[in-house]
Length: 150
Image (cartoon, rainbow, N blue to C red; front, side, top):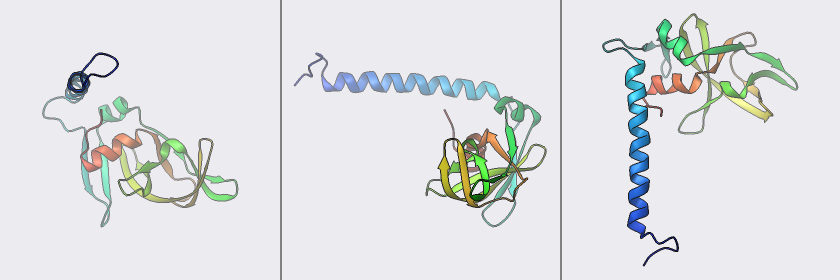
């Protein structure tokens, strides 16, 4: 049976599959060109039982435009970070990436109290004054867990 548009169901699937493969192919090309052959954009070492310390090359920091801000004391909450600093894992747990040294990033657990506009009020997390990543956090998460972003 044909749809109202005149295309059979299999044709729609074929069109979507082609479009998806073309967009994925484009992403793969960009990712390959971003890192020179033989040079890792980051290194990782253990920072605790379930935490890793990521160290990026200068080029990777520049390419990701990694930006940080300090954890602030929030209104009605002891801690506050911009929403862009927040990362969710597959289980819905919330994290931020701290920046204790240049080019070095360590994931830290946070407990969200509430989100108002672009501000996340935390019940717990890194102390006020700690540098956290606001641009590039999702890419750090991908680097830590080996996921490929598109």
